[in-house]
Length: 328
Image 1 (cartoon, helix red, strand yellow):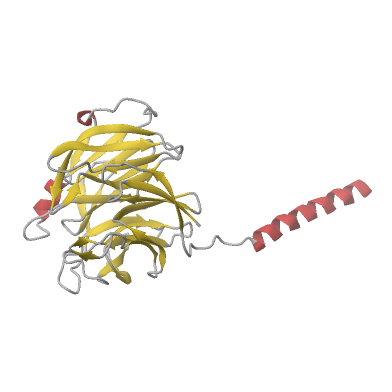
Image 2: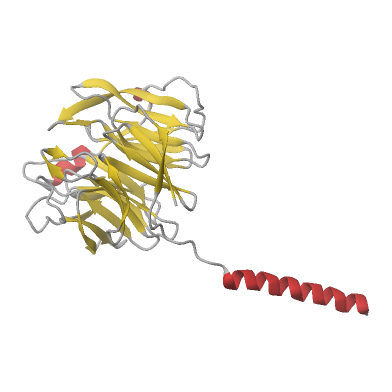
């Protein structure tokens, strides 16, 4: 009898202990500021970044411009070893900026990357690719025309298209941000069919929205906008879009937003590309929370950010050719 009572007592204490931990578990705090440490350098105008389940970083390099074919996609291991996955992509110079492949996304051993210069989405099976492997041929990677669809819609005058960023939605379909067309395009994952999901309005100054980032937070899409020349301070916004495609403002009074990610609590964290004068001023890039509070500043033209785990982020600097590791 004593053994039974003792067993029940131990069980009750175990339940109480588990309950107490659950009841008093503290939520993970949002970042108030970031500490930055160098991770990778000497990249050629990096723009987009993605992470796979092994912690490898996939990054797009826009190259050197001037119609060279030196843009590429690379994989970087957690220890910093770089392996070029595909090389020979077109790199151009447009209004003084180098352009090539833009943002990318990893899911289920496939790498989805956009090349706005040639208006295509590429979907590559990377399940067998390992550090140290030889680059694969671009011609061997299936591609899908995005520009053709966007230009037929005639969203802008003159017609423009620049497929720039992408994210998966709640229906497992792909949502592609076209910065030139100021639109979000939906791609059916089963049929590959493209359709208009949403368009973004002009700014109060009558400039194009120029969407640059998109995430899905579990109930809605959040989209960051860069705005057009002259990149007026305070004109950029974060828009929210329902799964039905209804667009409204989420947060305002930002400047030149070029990327967005989610914190562990699904709060948006955005990056400011920089303030504009005679070009983008060095050291005016920032990482900001959804309320515009500065988490990290002094950056030179950052372009993308991604979270790894709960409190670690990786940040791409296009101007410096670097990836930095952020923590708090």
